[in-house]
Image 1 (cartoon, rainbow, N blue to C red):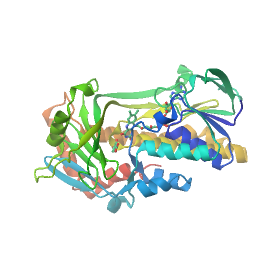
Image 2 (image 1 turned 90 degrees about the horizontal axis):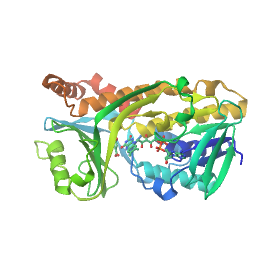
Image 3 (image 1 turned 180 degrees about the vertical axis):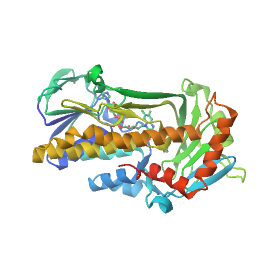
Image 4 (image 1 turned 60 degrees about the vertical axis):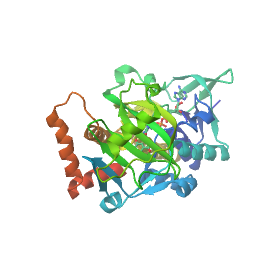
Length: 390
Ligand code: FAD
Ligand code: DHB
């Protein structure tokens, strides 16, 4: 089997890359360990930057998002029993769109299938060889048969647990990591929205986030022990925790409903600052992880792909290698900005065990500043909507 670009992973990064390459006449094959149903139903991120929505629309995969996604012009910060609004559009001229990651995936899979694109689901035993040559290959098993995919480039879009990153010799890799001692408990709820906009809440008991998915389905999160189990949390216990953390003194309260999904995710910051080696390039979660507080994970994956698609296009149409050579340096500027913002917002909003009462009050002082100073609000808003990047 031969293709121009072999892509490992059918997450947002891999599928978007395959789609963009197709639009420029470049052939690719996508290999994915999970089934189509599984990738189209796993609940993950929900906030899309305008950079992301603009790219999806321009690439012809934004129709359903435009119809079903909700454009938000601001969000609320809840602390000390009150809520203060960050007016994203007034501050930056930009907005964000709430549209679930698995809906983006459905749109991308549909587009690849409509174009007769080659996507292999349920593959196993993926391994990469020859990345230091001009003819790398990917071995994999599909339907019980072993295959070798020969290609010009291998793009590792296989997330944080994939095989691609480990294919770069460890002596050539430089990693940076920070693991947070807390996680997020996430729920999906059948209920009307609590508020018109997202609410990020800082409370002594811990962080909470009220987000949305549709007029009848809401997404909420609260800070928890990453080793805790969803079994320990009855619906009553979840609601009393969310009320304690989010309700305001003026009576504004979280709207309850039937909880139909519960999950816990750990939180960490991670960067592999080596994003390319020979003919292997890493994109998205395969190269970096952010804690979800700043809603950057999916958007960063898309921004890596924007850069990489352009570089591959320059290679195939003009025989240029300069953009490919510069890929890591170009992508890392935005990645480090997003890493800093996500880390800053995480430490601003979460209960930090082991820090002094003084430092806990500094969080409140900073929230007062961010919600009263135009300059401080603008800095937060620029980062949140994604316009402060290079
Ligand atoms: P992924 O979406 O991880 O896609 C990688 C794909 O590669 C997967 O489908 C995987 O099955 C496949 N794969 C792995 N190994 C192999 C292999 N060896 N061979 C072939 N295929 C392979 N971000 C936010 O901003 N907000 C959130 O609330 C949020 N929640 C999250 C919850 C969870 C549980 C996780 C894991 C992430 C969450 N994120 C969130 C982050 C965001 O979803 C990711 O940043 C985004 O999915 C990155 O896209 P990606 O394409 O790089 O990687
Ligand atoms: C959602 C997730 C986030 O990480 C975030 O910061 C905001 C919203 C969500 O899943 O809706």
